View 1 (cartoon, rainbow, N blue to C red):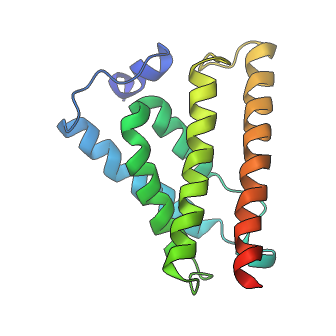
View 2 (cartoon, rainbow, N blue to C red; view 1 turned 45 degrees about the vertical axis):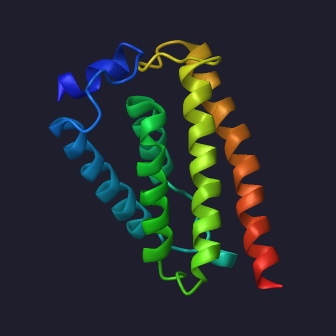
Length: 157
């Protein structure tokens, strides 16, 4: 497990070749974990089936920080499957695909900012790191949340 986390701890992307066995296993584990968390935490949904907490977002951001941009299709696939597998999945496929793309763009924004301009240490051992994590995540997810709900509201009218 240390070798898997080493690139993240060192603050760099995975150096594993695309399509390597380890990356394939991690990809399958990520998708399974994302969908499982999405399904398990779908309790007390508010209007439009939105829940008050979404731990799968953290898994998606960590995956993007590990895989870099080559993880984007993987995250989109997981978001698509997660959206489809929920009890509120009676939505049209186009709506599910649009909201999956919105979520994926939000995850990419958070990962790119935390790995770039607002780089944080994986240990979160400084106040600055914690504040950057909270600030970037909050700002991005407020924007993404507004777009996500806006798409659902527009589709329901």
